[in-house]
Image (tube, protein in one colour):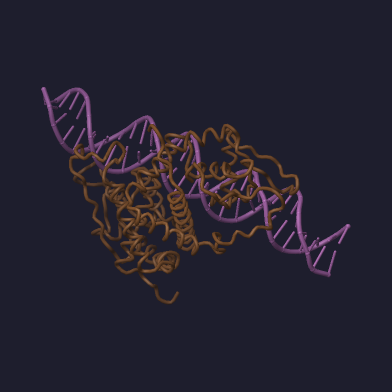
Amino acid sequence: MAHTRWLDDEEQRTWRAFLTAQRLLFERVERQLQNEARMPHGYYEILVRLSEAPDRTLRMSRLADTSLSSRSRLSHAVARLEEAGWVERTACETDRRGAWARLTDAGLAALETAAPGHVETVRSLLFDALTPEQAAALRDVSETLVAHLTDRPVWPAGDDKACPAPAQAGEEACPEAG
Amino acid sequence: MAHTRWLDDEEQRTWRAFLTAQRLLFERVERQLQNEARMPHGYYEILVRLSEAPDRTLRMSRLADTSLSSRSRLSHAVARLEEAGWVERTACETDRRGAWARLTDAGLAALETAAPGHVETVRSLLFDALTPEQAAALRDVSETLVAHLTDRPVWPAGDDKACPAPAQAGEEACPEAG
DNA sequence: GCTGTTGAGTTGAGTGTTCAACCATAGGAG
DNA sequence: CTCCTATGGTTGAACACTCAACTCAACAGC
């Protein structure tokens, strides 16, 4: 990097505002879930992804991808969720390295208990503050960034062949908010 | 909460895209700083705030506010930064409960070493992906959210009368990117 | 002077995340 | 079949953050 492309004033302000908004928002989301549902947001997301999967079951690696977790994080997290009785792990027959994670009934119940408060928080902290145009702009910017930040465009290319038999993660809208 | 105001499809997608973009972006920013400057982004922010203060010195509580830290987090963080020799703590004469945090020369040097890589990362991951209109929209949304999230508890109602004197945060631009 | 309350800041336990190292199996290439 | 690499997943140490409890000083009110 020969010479630094510093941020100009406008960019500076944009970046700091984004940083601040993001911090304040997710701090509150986190706290709400922690207080009312005794789980961090990352765990909530894991439960959501599992709840959307066929049979409420997903391979660990696939679950890691869809929940934006590293393998390690997911492994630790699922260990905790298993202790809580919300997720079960079972060995994979066709690939003996692999493992399935399955959302238990108790896990689904916990998720359904947590969802309303979480959704209300997201709505009141985010959508209630934005005009429809602002919300649309946020979506546009976010999707642009996601495309930019993922090597493989992830969104358009739904190419699937590496997965032997089972679960195809449904990437569809659902009652619970991610 | 009688009945939940669920997110519709559009909102669902917006929220998930935002969540994903935010996660991917800050994960990378974090990793870059950690790898190249051996400090987490939160610490970088603390150093930046101190570097902008007169005498590179700030009261702990003020520093906590401007760097969006809890008191506890800041206390832990400054302890670490002090070990690294980047920050010094000195007692406050006029208020013996208080403490000053001061950015040392070594701290300033560390910051100046870290800045170019960090700024380049922010530019390449964020601004390079956005059109000027998108960047403007992001700023608009972010500032709206900051106002919404700092105004007041926001929970009970939009009712304003219990708040004695809302402090207005000073929001100034500066050479280093926060 | 006392006494209770608020504010500044620290501390330690608990928890989640990261990183690097690790084990085991799968899938080639020879 | 044997080696070799890639993949799926786990583990433990290091570290950062949170929460609640705590100390000490400032500032009432009386």
